[in-house]
Amino acid sequence: MRYSLPVFFFLLLSFGALAQWDDTDRLSKEFHQQKRDALRVLMPEKSAAVFFANPVRNRNNDVDFQFSQNPNFYYLTGYLEPNAALIILKEPRVFDGVSTNEILFVQDRNPTSEIWTGKRLGVDGAKQMLGFKSVYKGIDLREFGLNWSSLNEVMVLYPSLPNRSPLSNAELGDLVDYFQDATMKSKVVVNESGLKPMMNSLREIKTKEEIGLMQTAMDITIDGFKAMIKQLEPGMSEYEAQAIIEYYSKKGGSEYMGYPSICGGGSNACVLHYTYNRKSLEAKDMFLVDMGAEYHGYTADITRTIPVDGNFSTEEKAIYNLVLQAQNAGIEKCRKGNDFRAGHNAAYAVIAKGLIDLGIIKKESEAKNYFMHGTSHYLGLDVHDAGTYQSLLPGVVMTVEPGIYINQGSNCDPKWWGIGVRIEDDILVTDTDPVIMTISLPRSIEELEKMMAE
Ligand code: GLY
Ligand code: MN
Ligand code: MN
Image 1 (cartoon, rainbow, N blue to C red):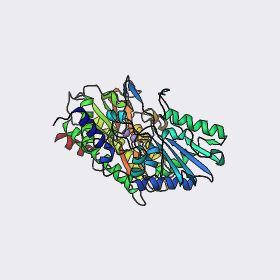
Image 2 (cartoon, helix red, strand yellow; image 1 turned 90 degrees about the vertical axis):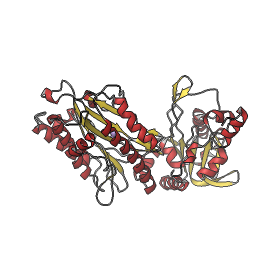
Image 3 (cartoon, rainbow, N blue to C red; image 1 turned 120 degrees about the vertical axis):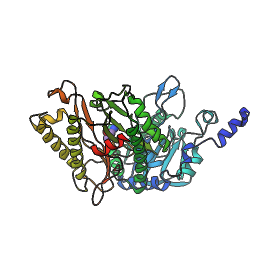
Image 4 (tube, rainbow, N blue to C red; image 1 turned 180 degrees about the horizontal axis):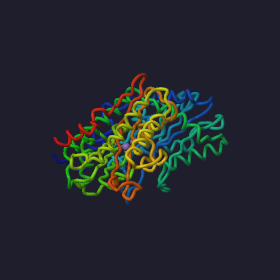
């Protein structure tokens, strides 16, 4: 069907829009409201908390990277557009006759921009879709009627601003300026360190809704891993294998990958965050794939390492089983009350002993030459998620991902050179046993060899 240009634009503005609201399984506005309320409980008397949206980042010339909302901003608002700010007040104030303890500043509607990039929520849309009583245009923050000097302190998390645009109004940089002007004039105390620990403790524990989205992110990533493992063969490039998992992720509804996909064959497996992914895979290579689909903001983080020809050699088997044993020891420590580092300590001890037994190292401290990263991090809106990183609490989701990386030229028998293995799964800490949320993706050599033979 063909439309004349005006009719096309009319259709675009009326319907072709607000694509993010096509999803019916997003976090509810009640979720975001509850998180604002929970933050307010942590805030001191007579304080305000101020958050900003992420900047739009330029890719090159007039092309920007796809916008990704700041996780704290998303967590507290559900707003998916740039150029926005949020003020949360400990105690309510009256603005324009409305008593409120939270004010959202959003991008204004703009028919010209909306022709290019789609419908914006605007003030009315934000009230309706996000459930805020008080929503203003970004420009309104410039002279906003908040008596800042009546507050004991203002806590703020500033964004990093890579590309300022001095010509336009109420872009993120302008919002930061308005805020800084107002707080400087009023001489109120501005606290840049208070909010982070509060957000860390809020975001650390996942609700059922969040765990559901994370499980979806993991399941669609696993669909991709299974397809990739079955299709892998010598001559395939690292990027072709990457494409299979990214295809299944997108097909499953993922908006982005949670981080640049790491697909390293042969010695590239020894580069911890290798993302070049251009090498052609050879039969003798081990192939390390670390990928995670992001679904409605929440990311998976999974690693499997497999032999390109479908069979583990004797040396590969020895290293792989050692990493697997270390991972199991780490997972066993994902229990409430344990220190966050307990899993790492357990995994490190297994790897150190195993490397000594294999003759690769002589003493325990040398294991860090081959296992040079931590074993776990929290997982959520960020792949390395916010959290207190103290003792484990039920509702925490964390990775367990030990690895052994033996570069060419390492100080051991050359038969080990070029082997890099990491195994990474995502674990939910509960009141009882750890739940391996990524359990449906095989880890054992027998299961992987069987899958590769399919
Ligand atoms: N994919 C990054 C990591 O595993 O931490
Ligand atoms: Mn990880
Ligand atoms: Mn990973």
